[in-house]
Image (cartoon, rainbow, N blue to C red; front, top):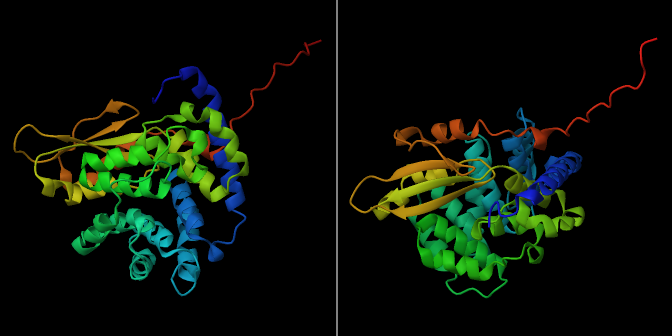
Amino acid sequence: MRGAVSGVVVSVLPRLEAAFRAAADELAEHDPQAQTAAELRARLVLQQVRRGTRWIDEATRGVEACGTPEASDDPAFEFLFACCEGWVQRATGPFRAAAEAWLARVVDDVDAVPGLFRYWRITGNEAVLRRALDATPTNPAPGDLGAGAAAWAAFQATAREEYAVAARAAVPTDPSRVPVARWGLAAHVHDLGPEDFAGAADALDDARPEDVIPACAQLALPLLVVDVQWWYDSDLFSGPVAEAATFPYPNTTLRFRRLPHSAQAVLTPILAGKATDPLEDIGVIAELIDDVVSHVDRTALRDAPRRRRKPSRLRNA
């Protein structure tokens, strides 16, 4: 469906961008030392879009102040996922210790699955992988967004098509039936573009800024697909694929294709539908992907567009 109604994109993108900027301004008024898990994730998305280190610094201070099980009443699975996101962006900060603390508190239910997979991608901990797989539903009910998120996370981890089928069955195709906080999930599961959310855009007016920020960033920025061609299942669990899966860019997804013969996995970034050269030096996968997305224009998510001055009607005397 992506790109189906090009005439609508022109009207939807400015609204998404404006909503993102307004939400960022609102979040800036919130005390980071009292941040929720959703606010932490929003600050980490802002760090990927805005210049400088303000947002990662605030996220760091917030985790130091209230991002541990002893200091927060938020569900453990929400903070686990958020702290893993921070861990990828700032390995030397408090995020690793916080993620490990939250992992010990997580109840292995469907809501915990995305965070468990994210922790496994970073650490390679096979026990956590088994926990995530055991908690992943294979036959979710239509409209069960938590189960849909879990199934999609399992697909992104294993390339097993049955998980993708389960996610598509659970997540509604109509964005108006999906809360703003889950827009990114719906976009990836059903290959939706910003134009597909035109009829649901009014929901942005009543959504929390911490939900608007990741949703609008994902829809407004071009999609980065990392095409993974593989033969050995072990390659799906390797460092290069893990780095691609956890790369800090708001609109990233993996696509899988089985190689016709035994060979090393091949990773190819595809940004906004345009494929780059396959990544040959898989030892520096994050740096290579960073070079690809460094050319993305994030200006509209940073600054309001300038109004064009009307020509003066005064004439020289």
